[in-house]
Length: 206
Image 1 (cartoon, rainbow, N blue to C red):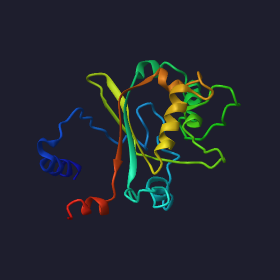
Image 2: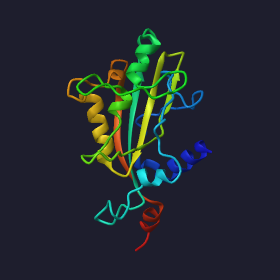
Image 3: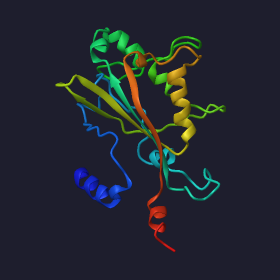
Image 4: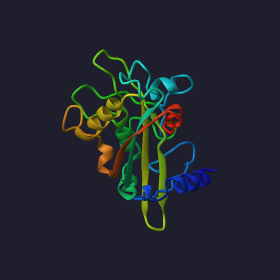
């Protein structure tokens, strides 16, 4: 189904676009990434999904974006040999969850090294949490020795993902960056806005 959708889409776009990178992802075991941990545990579910993902009239003063969503994608390559050389306890401390049963670990004290889970948790100045929808896809080729994760994050507020990346790459406090970056490096990154179906349908109207 996805192949046929892609074929029809590329036929319609024709020479207006060109392929820069093609990465084929897959679902791995029980929602895990190739690092061995369950991915997307904190994702919103049910009615919380549109509340986290879709821009509303209240969010958009131009009235052009309601129903759409911001999407950030990044391709990460993992050094699995180095990662697997760590003990399970060290891996868990970096991720912030247990590996086998996906139980959330306590946050470190303020001023100390934070886990990936803690650094990617975003709250505003009033302490209100702001989630995103992750649809990450693991990928890899044992023959070539290349393994990674394609991060795909949807949000109604772009600043939420931007703040998340700032905390991961710079650290909180600055300098204490996400230690997962010692084993995973980003090689691509793009930001998109996906308009609503209603807006797309109106583009052909006079």
